[in-house]
Image (cartoon, rainbow, N blue to C red; front, side, top):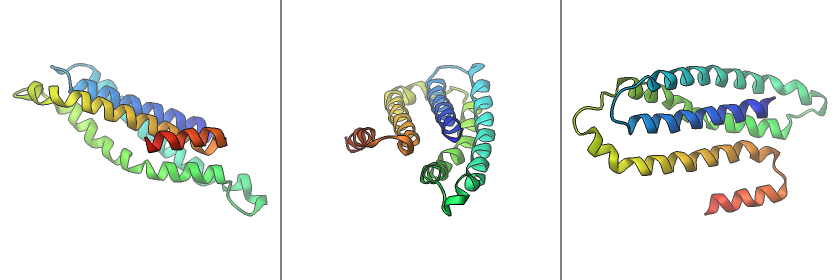
Length: 149
């Protein structure tokens, strides 16, 4: 369950970033900003649930006298993702308040391909981090190769 929730969280976070970049790179306000806002709010609720579930999962390995290493890795990944969650209120504010006036188009036109590439690479890395605790040796080697490229 924790893995599925983390995977859902990663996909939703990736969608928020992709849609936010596409929206900000647009030319006028649209209803899309409210969809992004709703996704951010839903993701924040999901993040709290995942954190609670991972923190409370100690009992699954209580008889072993230690925490399950896979759960521990997911917990560390979730804690490291906190920086991404901390930025979401600013993303929401920017999306809701962008007026697309002035030199917006000139400024954003040069940034758009770089922002999209950054989102694509960050998304791949995040999804890879979430799969890593469940990956076999062969998969981990390919993941390491991707990271070092």
